[in-house]
Length: 400
Ligand code: ARG
Image 1 (cartoon, protein in one colour):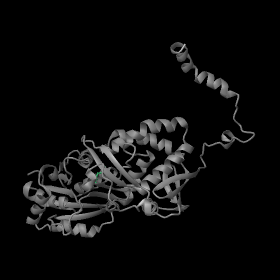
Image 2 (cartoon, rainbow, N blue to C red; image 1 turned 90 degrees about the vertical axis):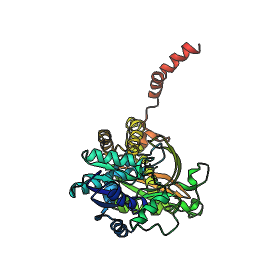
Image 3 (cartoon, rainbow, N blue to C red; image 1 turned 45 degrees about the vertical axis):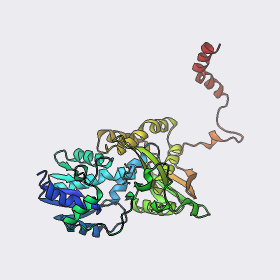
Image 4 (cartoon, protein in one colour; image 1 turned 120 degrees about the vertical axis):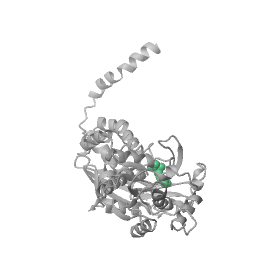
């Protein structure tokens, strides 16, 4: 017996469904409690809850994680402009520590001694779940049946049927999809060949840029202290803001990413992402930072904080002291990141075309090429003499 009472992260798919009888009959659990988390994946959560009960769970709960997802996970990550390996805004990766936190809450409430998830042994998500759960509740056992059971898909379905889990009625799509408010991740099927162009059928949040409107659209994103608060001047709650931005920018074909990325477990994998709101928010946040942070803070943040932050999110270290420390830097730098950014949306591109801020460091008197600027032109000469000195000395020695 591996555990007495287990809370399972439940998605409604075949794998997590089969985890229920497997935990009960192979691993000797007495009770399995299922927890499904609504992160804006547009699924019928009540139907998923019922399916957990049919699959043998003693109880099944649905948690609405949307508001916390945006406020506690997406906003901090946006402050860091976090993009793994420069391209992936981390929608799937950011959701895992939240799901882990909700699992631990249910575990404590119901006196569970273990937490289970349906991840296999090849991906990043198992790492994120295991490490997050252990970080929050080191005394809980983590169980990952699919990491050990070694069944093929057909065997998994057959195993489920023995315990009354209906085999999927529709022919299963060859793709593996993870979907939440911050984006959609798609892999497998023909995408496993990195040379093959993604087929149109895989997309769900974005219009094909080629058939996107012929007229450009515009959107203005308002920020207060680094946090998005409005669209086109209308103040919106966090979930509504991301929802609306996804719809608007996705309709212009913005948000598609085709990537070969490095998983933590050492495997390169090809993944397609759709993250319209994420890309637009990061582009606008960067544009506002460029206006409101000093050169030194910007550079240090881009070179050291942002890539480190993205890596730690990707690698499952959300609940680590490193993130807390970096959040300290981010909170301090975001204090002045207030203002508005205007973007043009056109056939797959979101381009920043305007920005303004009450905290702007942009000084037109210094920047202007018109008559009467306030910059001391003569000061440049002495500055350049000192600035260029090391290079001049090197050249005198090596290129006499
Ligand atoms: N590669 C992404 C990550 O590790 C997404 C993983 C889940 N993808 C999927 N298609 N099910 O964060």
